[in-house]
Length: 327
Ligand SMILES: Nc1nc2c(c(=O)[nH]1)N[C@H]1C(S)=C(S)[C@@H](COP(=O)(O)O)O[C@H]1N2
Ligand SMILES: [Mo]
Image (cartoon, rainbow, N blue to C red; front, side, top):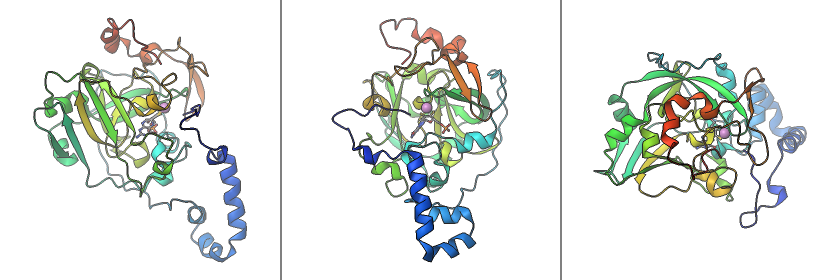
């Protein structure tokens, strides 16, 4: 995500290291640190690389097979993105600002995992992920995903309707919004040491949006449990909104009657608002949203309003004519 860093949380230019400079510095380190190099090279290039990373790469997470019947109601109308692309091109700022955070994300500790259900609910409680999964039935849904940065993918997610979690949580009649919070572990997430970001990552939906049939919680994809870099063990998936609305690795769901201040909105509300519904006709202040690049093939295709899900979601916004619905 590109942000214009403003006064107040502005950071020195030296702290924003462009990827090329990082790579160059690593190359220099490799050349001079002769001592540890022989052993590192013997262990293979990945090992040598990780020796000089600030986060030591953890061994790759062991994904388990996970299958569920595909729900045919949601045809994506385009080819699936190859799993390799989805698993190697990510946004997960807790692990870094680049798209190449998959190695670092293997350090995410996904078990045991609990989710706090709190705020305006009948009984506040913390539920274990396994306990939660025993109370829902999993299905596969192929959804289009559109990042606000104008890249896109098509993914066979495995999960269950967000509405099922809402029902389990038993919100009070006064609750009108959900606020999601992502895990924030400074020991395994190097991004948390970048203090200009408003950690932890939070996102929000109206209760009505959360109850919409498309709103989904994903626990796997491509027939396996969720890779850490894609938001293991459980992430929000709201396909009609820009990707940043789909918070990864969630540990808390709060029911509230206040519109939650969210991560990207707090950073730059003019560019990343609360609603963030996909619309090709409303450009981002710094780029067009008319088209999207499909990762894996790099083919450009037109972007669709509501990311093509208008038949399911447009009616929710009919009365919200004064809101900035598409940014
Ligand atoms: N916790 C957290 N959730 C997040 C993000 C993030 O940086 N941190 N990035 C968001 C953005 S901008 C996008 S496009 C998607 C990317 O999901 P993917 O890496 O599985 O493609 O995750 C979203 N959820
Ligand atoms: Mo995104």
